Image (cartoon, rainbow, N blue to C red):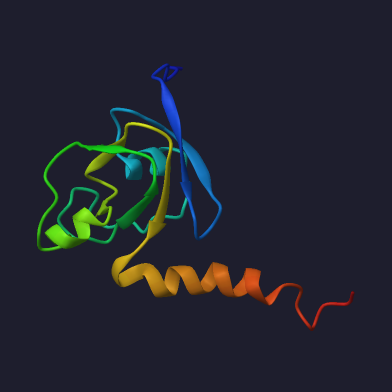
Length: 123
């Protein structure tokens, strides 16, 4: 068994409350996938599809490769939007999923939390 001894920082997802450790030299998406976690939508994992579009709410990241302007505009990038498969954390980060998967992803978890206890469940 090989142990990963790289230094890691915490990555947190606002919509789910999920958090996971991620090394400074691995993508935000790879860190999540390595642990079998779900949270950031997964597509091609190489920057070609734009499915893993996230906004960095807190913390700092650094590029592992170019981010396609077909998926992240210069204006979006200035607002902290990037592809989770193309960046790594420099510090602990807080992310939120954005783009075409934002609404379905957010509604599932947020609706359940906002609704509180179900009216059909005995109290």
